[in-house]
Amino acid sequence: MKLAQEDEIDYHSDRKIKRTGVNQQQLRLGKIEGRSSKLHYVLPIVLPGLLQTENYLRVTSTEITGRADAQKRNAVNKLRLERQQILGCENKQFTFLLAEAAIRNMLLPAAAMAKQIDHLIELARAIRAARCGSGRRRDPQRRLRQDPTARPAGLSAVAY
Image (cartoon, rainbow, N blue to C red):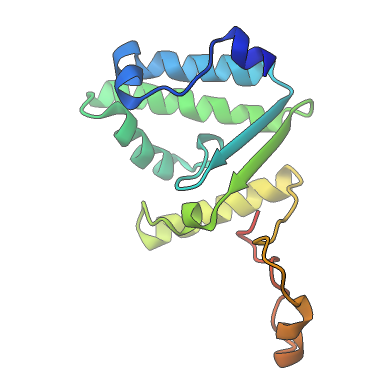
């Protein structure tokens, strides 16, 4: 919280980001992430930028950059991809709270979304992610009693 207060972090509307420059926004976020030891991301509809594949990133950055020329969009995408390198830092602790809607939101064709989900699984394994259920109380053995080949609830590969 101290870093957020020092950098006067607050919600920035799309209009404000476009006015100040998307590149500046990405540089500012990278600076904050670099100085932080614990990072928490909660985005219910889309995947956090640090977890996006290049194709997914291109689609979401179109929303941010609007009608910017291709050179400007490519520069923003490059900065966003560079920010992903922070995932390899051993001294950082990440919390990504992903809603199922973010994964089911088909921003890309099915094959590209499958690659995005594979990317999430690879990242989850690489950064030792903890699995979470949906939070609903249920009998996890019920499905196993009905179908012995079924996986217990909350252990799907995309529930990271």
